[in-house]
Image (cartoon, rainbow, N blue to C red; front, top):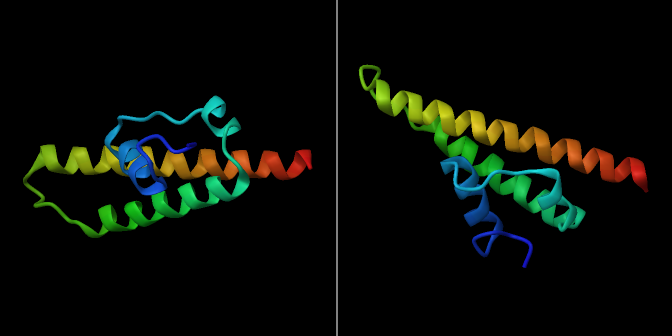
Length: 90
């Protein structure tokens, strides 16, 4: 099973929480379709987090939200980069 946590959604959620760090070694075990599925789930979670607006005076909630957004944005760019490299090798 290529997805840590059992599914693409669970893995994407764990990436946002900081429990799973993505790297090239992890991507090598995944097919292009699995990477696309993971990217879809990461983008879906990212959209949900962006829609949640904590109170502006709650600094801790704002920083937690911003860290999740940063992790997920980084994950999307890493997945896109790896997909592009896979296409170039073919």
